Image (cartoon, rainbow, N blue to C red; front, top):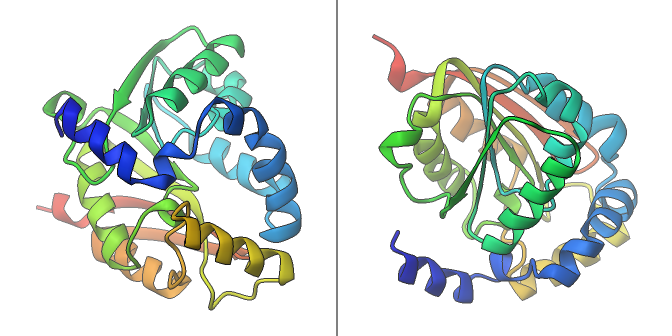
Length: 238
């Protein structure tokens, strides 16, 4: 995607443009504390952060949809063993914010900023390099529905994996999931504003996309959040 096309896409995509400096300053409190605990019922510290850290490994990690950089920054002790951290997002403001936070947490390795849409093919320079690729709270912000949008994203990011690498992440399910009153209200508001695009997202259809692309898949649901990991791309089989 060209710079001009990317700029146009950001203006049209509320899920990217919503993350201004003011929102980023409130993000950890509102999303990672209040919403995760009371709306989505999947606590950050006891569920999401351990899952992120568990699959983080190797010499290079790619984090897509970086938010405030909370996960790599908080996982800094384990991340210290990683020589390269690539941060990929459509919003240049979140990239800068996340990079600064990871640096402040003490990470000494190389940080690469990748200003790019997740639907676009990765550049050749990123192919086959990463031992782990994280997609935390990305899918539910994307337009479309499962399995189609997940299949498109996986087709774009899977070539980045090094042999034995893992793609993993978490996403909030749509209306069919057992939401409480708070969660249903947030789903309604966020989808209406275009911040979310997950009204029809289901665990079953996400799993369908994952199993079509990978030989090894794990998937579990905590509250209305699905945590998933996938290894051994089917396209890589001899």
